[in-house]
Image 1: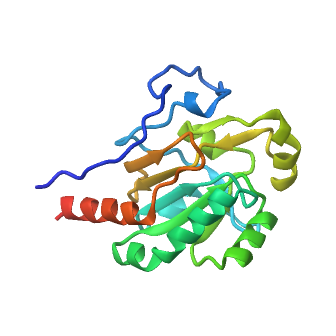
Image 2 (image 1 turned 90 degrees about the vertical axis):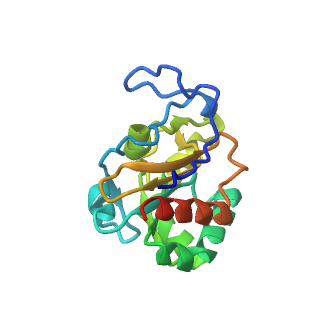
Length: 203
């Protein structure tokens, strides 16, 4: 059986100890969950305001979880669009796409309409999910007012490091790409290659 390859950007603080509940000041100092671990369950809001548990979202089909900073971020919007172009192949390989940000449901609706996305967007406005995954860090103070407004008053100044997690229906992490440089994202081509390799490893 072939073993799947994994492409991860290792962070300078990847193995550093982060006290429970402590949020790092810098993106480079996050301490994310690792491949083989199980993601936490959390409540997320859809663009229509309805509440969904993460466990319920992924229980029927493995998922590509995209964590982006918000609809105000041009790099995020470009990445969402690139993944959209690969959606048909991703679905064919047996995965769904789930994108999560601190944006409020109202802002998600705007992003959805502007980007014309077919896949699901969810709001983690208070940062519960990203904190549980270990990818949250404190945003620069100059961004506080903007984040508060775009989250409907729920975001207390947190940002996710833009990340991609591939998880199975139990929430086990099969692959992850995490890069503290928000300008650098996992390409759709490389994501497809990873998914194919994962599929081959199960054959």
